[in-house]
Image (cartoon, rainbow, N blue to C red):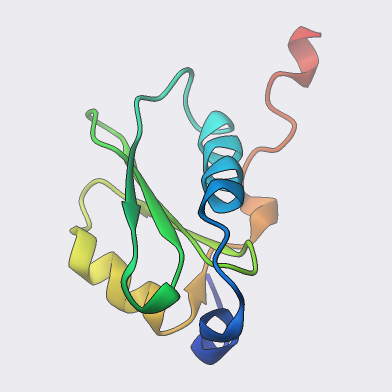
Length: 103
């Protein structure tokens, strides 16, 4: 995990649709056709996409498009506190090449 200054994300304007698109793209690297719930985070922190299925998880997306993945074993509030504190998952961690072999 990487830590960023949390105040950076608070000063960026929130474009919820853009952040949802980013989160969906990240989840697409982790699961096939995940059913996602969207939660707008407080204080302009961004959005959280929740895949509630067994083995699912949450991806918190900041206005600067950095993200934090938390597995389903971590509750929402604990993930939010880590996200608020600036913890992020390096984007390289997501399997961005998934599906390319199928092409």
